[in-house]
Amino acid sequence: MKKLLNRYFGKAWLAVTFLFLYLPLFFMVVFSFNNTRQDAVFTGFSLRWYAALMRDTKIVDGFWLSVQVATAAGVASAVLATFAAFVLVRYRRFAGRTLFSGMVNAPLVMPEVVIGLSLLLLMVGVQNALGWPQRGMLTIVLGHMLLGMAYGTVVVQSRLLEMDRAIEEAAMDLGAKPFQVFFLITLPNILQAVLAAYLLAFTLSFDDVVIAEFLSGPGVNTLPQVIFGYARRGINPTIYAAATLLIASVTLVVITYSVWVARQTRKREREIAAATRAELLALQAQ
Image: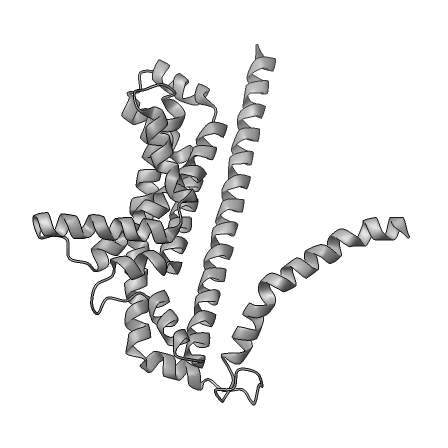
């Protein structure tokens, strides 16, 4: 009995965990094809809510705004996170390092309500002083950059800590300048982490409601804001259809990224094996 328990308990617990996480998503996908507004009884298959989704200008406009905001915030966050991680890993001692590290990591533990409110006060103060920027897409991007940079720094920093510095030192010994070492040696080695930081920042930005609520202006609503507004007024199966399309898109991106990472890993392993064989043959020839 004990042997059976040890053998199947872990698998059963994993299955229960996956059911807890994904069963609600499964029901939402199923009811996005329901032909009535019923949220408890599936009365028949229909694509009416997907057709209604295409006609809903608020959701469509919110989706494209979310894509633009998430893309801009993701790119900026990945770039800033790479620089911040590089500074924290490669320069162990400099004036203000502790303060800089604390400020970079603060958004990780700070409630989003506090971040959103503080950014709102900052934007209002800057706007009163300079007359710019107006609350809208730009302010949302700036707010999401703050959050995405904090998470991206952790991802890139972990990859830099694993990287062998001997490669960079060898390049500098051969006459490469610091910026050449960074762009030709360091960046290609951490590219997967930078891409992961971009995807993480993109997802966080696309999903965010709290910061967007504080920083958005009149008539500027991201997709999560539109969905949240609809949900407060009652059940709307159009939301299910929008969420189903998002799930399908995210799944496709994750699968594509996983395949790319697996191929890059196998390619790097083959190159290392080939270099090792060449070195062994050179030693044997001597």
